[in-house]
Figure 1 (cartoon, rainbow, N blue to C red):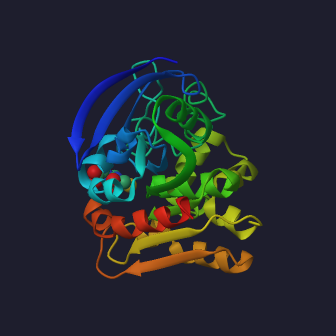
Figure 2 (cartoon, rainbow, N blue to C red; figure 1 turned 120 degrees about the horizontal axis):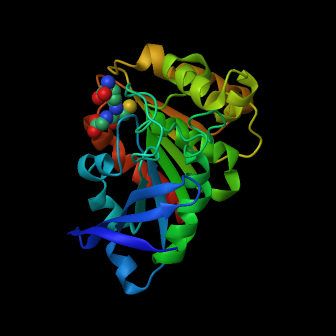
Figure 3 (cartoon, rainbow, N blue to C red; figure 1 turned 180 degrees about the vertical axis):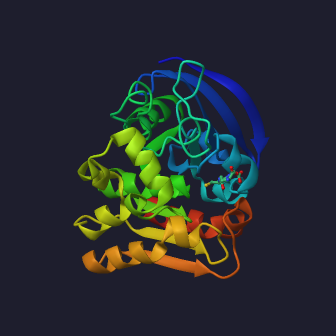
Length: 279
Ligand SMILES: N[C@@H](CCC(=O)N[C@@H](CS)C(=O)NCC(=O)O)C(=O)O
């Protein structure tokens, strides 16, 4: 596996870096970002928080806007940020922002024209950690978090792979994609009409029947324009109650869907993950 460094910026004593590599699961060249805290340069193997971004994002939005590096440096946690879909000229796309490139929804697509590249689930669960853990001074202690579409991705991936993650968190996640317009549009396209196959990618469905628990923290802004139609945190809360899932769901008054919200609470999420990664 060859990977190519495309940027390096020192930050809070550690390094923000971007890499390109050819992804076997996505069948195209992908870029990801990694923040390596200062102690990763001393030969320590540091734990990793994987961050999954939302619709329209690349590997850069979180790195530029969330302000996570200062505390990640202090806590000694690396952060890995993949892109949100396969990309490139030969990769299927759609004119709308909520389907195709920038909108991979962290599923393995089974339908044409998406199925030859759109395997973000396999990429995030298997290929990217394997690459990161064999390339950088990081351990196999993992946590996962994300925003909106990426919050959906983080919850689904942790719920389906509880042995792989110490903790999971999300900002403004799409909690029940089977029952909201963004999710229904994406799942119809990527997975087809059979709604049974959708259940494996629905955080509320998975949480309701969970028997193995990954500690979960979710923050949702009450001033979020997408709250009622798309995000529906009350459905996740009901699912958690049904399985006695260890979910902490916090509604934050006045906050919207933007990175201003994420930046306001990212420290809480980093400390939550650090407690579980180092516990
Ligand atoms: N219609 C909006 C929806 C997209 C949106 O709100 N994206 C969120 C994630 S769901 C985001 O993080 N945008 C990029 C940013 O704020 O940096 C747009 O196209 O900007």
